[in-house]
Length: 366
Image 1 (cartoon, one colour):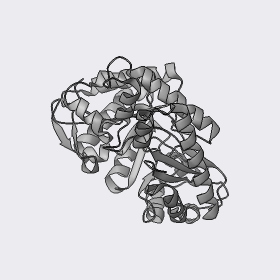
Image 2 (cartoon, one colour; image 1 turned 120 degrees about the vertical axis):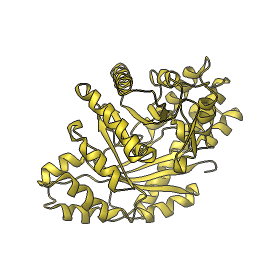
Image 3 (tube, one colour; image 1 turned 90 degrees about the horizontal axis):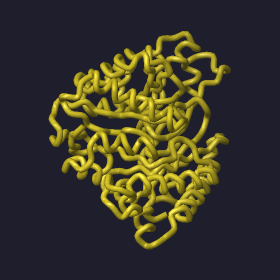
């Protein structure tokens, strides 16, 4: 399908109580998705990443009566050669020490922790220390989830409590072209969803993976020049952040969710606006047209979370704690899971940080 790629093909690897040891569990999940990925490439042209999502590390360690560090080390060694990225979610915010261990020692590993009101200050301090001590790229592998992490191929806020083969798509160009040609939004997304689900089912069956549950997160997500922000602007007819923006995102979300209901959607299924991953968002932040408060306002109605935003040097731990309280309130009002991935920098607003594969990313004004 022209203008569409597979962003991620992922396997959610739950622990069965029939698995007696950690090593036996690791052996069962060592098979990779490469055969299915090759089949999907014939439909989409490219599969960008292969991923694996584990169940909660702390819960698994308790069940197996082993140290959480041993769980991560054993599973990482077993499968990291076959996958681009691995998710090691935490269920208990009291295990914050594990976050540093995971991020510092395993470069392909992502992790997330659920928000807890009573631990807000501790979480804010931890996020600040990760950015300053481990670096900005390590901080990009960490998320806070407002509500329990979802079963989704989107990292880092995910968990693998149920076995499934999951897929996410990269399709801003496809959708932008369709909108500009006058195509109807819902019909365009339903056609995409129908094609994608059939392709995934065919690939999984042909590869004989033996997994019944299939899930596609149809979220509109960007990657650099393939911009979600430009799609929103195409729908609204206005610059992102100007009147009409929230209405446009809402219309896109409605169309995504209708398609997801018909074709085995799961996860977030919303517009995603991660600043560091979207070249148009970078432009708007760099020129001061899009501030932190503007992005938060979008979360209030129809965006999956506050994602990949670089915060300035004078943004304190106390302010970060208050920001998380705001996101927690939005999670409660929306009754939907919200993710947060922010990076605390030592730079003033408008300066740019080098962020590896994300390129140069501007620091946001508050």
